[in-house]
Every structure is written in C-alpha cells, then in structure tokens.
Image (cartoon, rainbow, N blue to C red; front, side, top):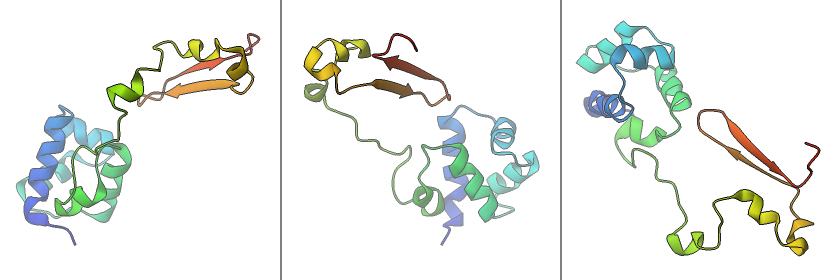
Length: 126
C-alpha cells in the first residue's frame, strides 16, 4: 500500500538527490509538469503508471522505499572493500598480463550508467 502522506516528501528527496526541478523531473519520466506539481502539493495521489516510470527511469530508487518509505534511498549497492580492491589494477588490460590467465579471459566490458561502455579485448583485431 502506498504511504501517500510521505510520498511527496520522498518525491522531494528524489528531486534534491538528482538536483532536478519539478519540470526537469517531469520531462525525464515523461509525465506532465502539472502531475508533479499536484503530487508534490498533495492534491493528487501518484498513479501506478507514474510509480513505474519513476522506478524505470531512476535505477537508484527502490520500489518499496518509493511506495512506503521502507528501505533505502538511494539503493545501497554492495561495493568491494579496500582489501578486495588491492589486487585489482586500475587498468583492465593488466588482467591479460599473465599468460596462464590470459587464455581464459577473452573480453572485459565496463558499462556506465549513461549508456556508454569501454571494451577491453585480448584480440587486437577488434
């Protein structure tokens, strides 16, 4: 069930976190600006379509948190500790330096949130 009394507060938190105006947010989630205004003022309740658009547009938003306030925002991701990172080079191509392991690794692709990516391959023809 949606905790509508705190929904507008959570929506304001999202706007602040992403540093977006209500208009810019409405454009990102493809809804009318008046819809955001009415939800923020408490005049209207969010629709399921609105909730779905927000969660699909912003992957850092947990559905449960958005609906009820339970959980975390932004989503916590399990990051490796510094001890886990001590063996990882900042240059992914270094992963191919050991001949024994190089035969197992064909390609490493790093995907970024903005949709871009970097491709590191053992095959120099690519």
